[in-house]
Structure formats: structure tokens, C-alpha cells
Image (cartoon, rainbow, N blue to C red; front, side, top):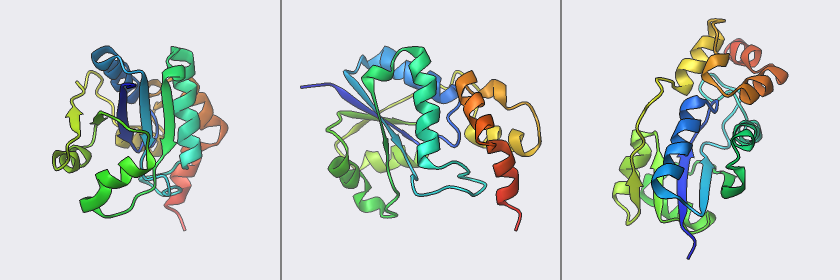
Length: 170
């Protein structure tokens, strides 16, 4: 049986901390396949979720291609169902079978505690969060150093920082 590990996050945007977490998962688990689930796939164009699922997909793909691990990864957008009681079952019904789950989210880890799926811990070696990256974009500060250079190029190509500034303005 293939060893599949799940890593789930919103990736709004995908930053160097996420990339480091993926590297840690490969170091710890040596999976045959890493399933990267893009959570809240239906959310976009607001301050908390400025990027679409397809844009986040491209960000992840761009960063992983240069790192040479894309061939062992599957990137899958996942819509919210807003029902914590069946969330793990929902994931199992739409994803390939996985043996362990990782996330930076306390909430996600708590939901998995009530299932038979074990969770793994990621050491936060880089003090970066997507919230901080978005705030730097809003404040016109240097956010590019917190993301992979291919991700920065992509966000600039879609005017992502400008979008983030403008989504809160009516």
C-alpha cells in the first residue's frame, strides 16, 4: 500500500513556512505521495482569503516544481462543508486514502483527534504566517521575502497585493 500523507491549509498565500513544513513532512515520513489539500477552496476576494483556489494551486505548484518534489505531490482544492462532526469523513470520501494528517491549524488538529487518523507535528522553524504576509501587503511592506520567489512573481503578475488592498473597499 502506498504511504500517503495529508497536508491541509488555506495557503492564503503559500509562503516559505508552508514550504518548510512540506520539507519536514518528507524528512519525517518519506511518503510515496503527499496530498496537499487547499482548504476553503470556495473562498476568495476578501481580506482573509484574497486568492482563488486555482491561484493558490499555481503558487504551490510553482514553489514545489523548483524544489523538485512536485512529482510526489497531489494538490487538491477542498471546499468547506461547515460541519465539524463529519469533516474527516468528508475528506476521506473525496481524497485518496491517507494514513496521517498534518496542518498548521489548531482547529484541524482538534477535529482529527476524534478520528482514527493520526496527526503529525510540524516544527515552526520560520516565523512566518499568511496573516503576516497579507498584512505586509496591506501596509506596502516587503512581503516578497516571506514567499518563494516564484510565488512572489506570480502574485505580482496577478496584482495580488493591489487586490488585497482593494477587496475591503466598496
